[in-house]
Image (cartoon, one colour):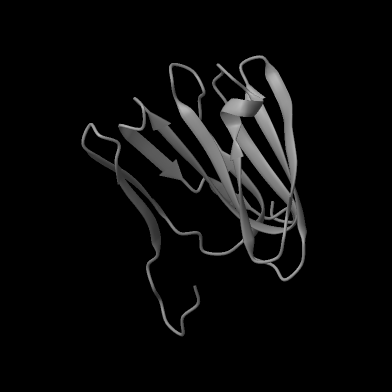
Amino acid sequence: MTANQGVICERSMYWNNGTGKAGHDTIGVTAPADNCYMAEGTTLYGFETYVLIANPNGEENIVNVFYATPHGQEIGPQVIIPPWSRATVNVNNDLPNSDVSIQVSGNLKIVAERAMYWHNRGGGTDSIGYMENSNEP
């Protein structure tokens, strides 16, 4: 989204999995960045964790995912995202039964967020994490 004056953006999702209405929401990012750090995630206790990565560029973006676990760093998938597209990484497939923090880094600027669901999607949360450019202190 672009505007000629200040705007407020968010991404909201709402659903009903049969046990009642649920939803989550996150603020929008102010600009794409080289890296995104997401502090909290888990695949324990029936939680589902996803990393959603957007490529806001006019060319293919090679994106690497890294997981920080209680047992040390795990290398996640490398995702090749076409121009102006989004990819979803299912962390449960890569790292079952673990607490996890996540770093996402692209060879071009990215926008990323982490979505988590629990209780058979009876609840959920979403976060953009901390966006950082490599040349910043």
